[in-house]
Length: 317
Image (cartoon, rainbow, N blue to C red; front, side, top):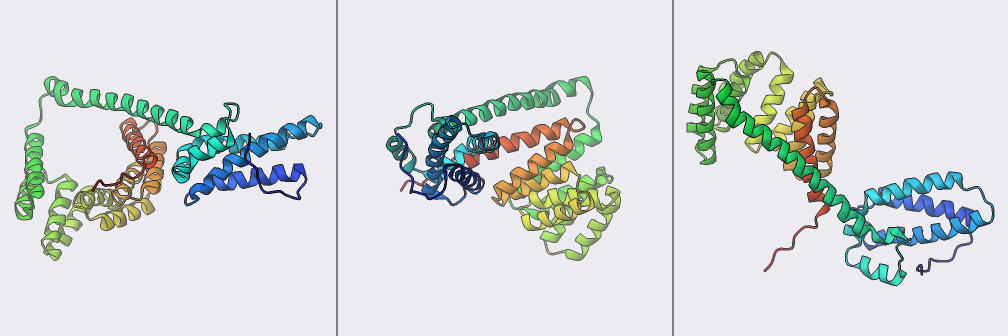
């Protein structure tokens, strides 16, 4: 038995079209709806009743059927968000509505749970694929091809610098990166790290010189900005990282790497919806040319979808 809706003076056809319009608008703008999100389910009950009545009377409802398919697709897609907005009012409302299985919209909790399980399965399979790649790179590949001594030295110094950074010793980290640039002066990321650490230590003029040098080594401003954005992000200087990535994407809006890096910065800033959009753009732009970036983007998307689907935990006293 459907819950009663306020009476209306509209004709059945106009009421149907009005409810479809209201349902579509509400589902597109669920954020902040609170328990009012449940109204969509009541509207779906009334829509089903009106459709049956009008079709029994011989009314052609093909346009309304198309609109209903759109509303149903939105409802399935946003089932989790509707539940979060409705909160503890949802089970009570379903009980009051005496919902049957034919009125599937009252079982959005099961739809959301199934979608989440599917996301977790995709994430698990992707993680297995990444793990296989990592094992190949770290275990098998070194046995097939000997490591270049210069590369090994640079990686050792990077590791030493990262350890010193974690300990808060900027001077020691700077020394390690400076030694690394002497080993491989053609790696722009190493020069940028030197510049960023000089900047952090207040040696701004020296830092600026290093940035100019890094831009030359990088072969252009775009690569320089992407690299410095990555370094700034690693140092937690998120606003500066975002500024660099914004400029990089102005230079090349189709940079898949730029969109991915921007996503990581937005995620760190807790702007999760924007981050999700950037990861999707990165995956779309990477396509078949950069399968590893597609995989990384999809992993981040799956993780964010899980975060967005979960309620914020309440700290225990």
